Image (cartoon, rainbow, N blue to C red; front, side, top):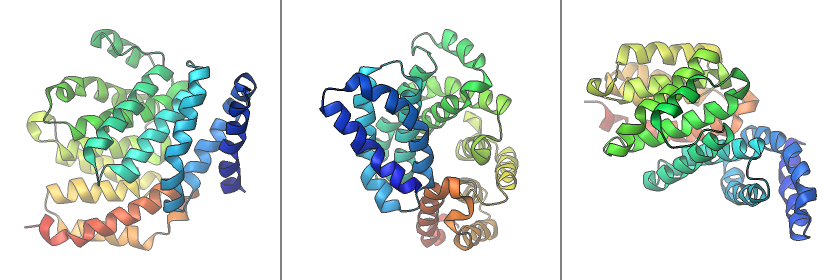
Length: 282
């Protein structure tokens, strides 16, 4: 039923818009957006999601032109572009993913009413974001930090890293268990991926990953994947790496239905990672 709901949402809106009924479509769009975002991550068919998501995102951008300040649409666009880049683009085309993450970040900041101008003012605004805005803050944080991690050789990314991390710290302050412990996964990834001179800390990373896995009882597979990819490889713990590979392999993607799309993509990514294990460990 939810898959059907997602597939019908955008044809209906397209008909409304093409018929010159943009004003009529906007209330309908706003009410349907939460259902769309839930249905997106509950989708277990990777091919369907990969092929349909770009068109759906473009249609939402069209809807946004008629209501530029709509928080629900801005948040959904931030979430959608972040998820699309992370699950389907980054491994194949990091440069393109970088642009998509920036796009997502722009939508997320707009949803929170934060102008991308003076860093000091932005930092103050970030530190004041309430828990009620956790969804838009979280996806902005994911997009911004992913962009930074892809561009650590660029001065602009180094310059923005403090703001991206401030967003993450705010998420950890107000809702560390949001989306099955994903904030812990992100912090663990940052600490494991970066060298010590840029704030990396492998022991702390390990703690964050373990906290994330415990929160979902091992059902949110993104935690195991990044734990293996960044921490296990960095400390050259092949035993841990292989145990995480096995855990992901043995867990069905719909063990956590609300994150089936992410789990399905992670299983594919983990399989590819395991195939180059001999190259990753000395």
